[in-house]
Image 1 (cartoon, one colour):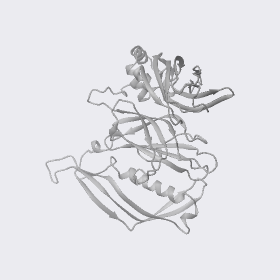
Image 2: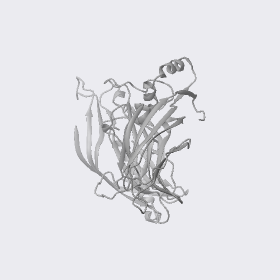
Image 3: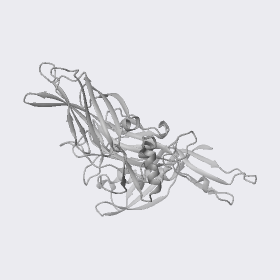
Image 4: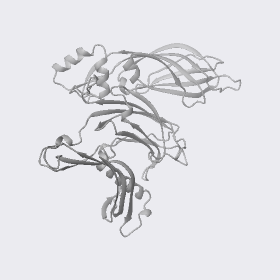
Length: 430
């Protein structure tokens, strides 16, 4: 049963707030009120009055939440950013404690109602790849962006990326895992901030992905537009984009998808999915089953990249042409290759193939930079960035990529992966 309810209270709550500077402040929270849709579940149904054993209640949809903050004996506005930080923390705590799928259970009749409690149903693997065209929040220089990701907004369930200084097109290539309790209603939230040092970080933009839009067991590669507020979508200003790779792996699906978590060995879900389909891995699995030592699989192999051609590159020479070439770089190993220069062309054809020995395919990236060759130097035209997830899963594919940072231009590529899986001890350096 779902009911729309409005709740107002004249309660007064005193919080002891400790700041990063070590200052302790008594903050009063009062005039609390909210409106939302509550979900009531009467379960299990029984033969005796009142015909159900327990009641579960949860806030299914939050419409409005208001409260007043006041520093006892002072003005909360005298400390920059404090009011916003406290308000955000309180809202997150309320949301996580009563918002669906979190639920409160009230026993009506004696019995064991543990089956009504919130339980994990799967794991969401997230690779934070990069962002581009971020809004600059700094007057001098560029923003210093970092990302915060969560499914449930509590501090111990929130992931934070490293900060990339003075960069509006940061590359993170960081991997995270989130426990999922309800794939039909939960969503992943990504917030990009500008690190302001000792001052409060400034929000650049945010985005969200609904888990119900992900196909279980399939990697989804997405670019998400950043917005100012996820609940109020009135601001149409372009704030940049964030690039994610997502993989949702449910526990024990009945539709034929093999649960990649069946192994007890320490691997990410993506490593297990790839391992289950890679040639020659069965022998490794048998070997691991015999040994008691905890080990992980490194996705090691040879990446073969054919730079076929480019189309509609921007004009950079005074004569209305360009002399383009491409520099290919593996991010972790910094191994580089370079195509030949094609003179006087905005649609160059290279058809050159380069091989890279990759030691850790799941956590490496391929960066392709397009340059214009000049007699007395070179001009940067743009770049394409690729994780290796797709080529590892598919083995081989062709694709056309937009050249980032350029007014126009596409790069045509062919990629092939030749796996050479190896084992390493858990926690070892590589």
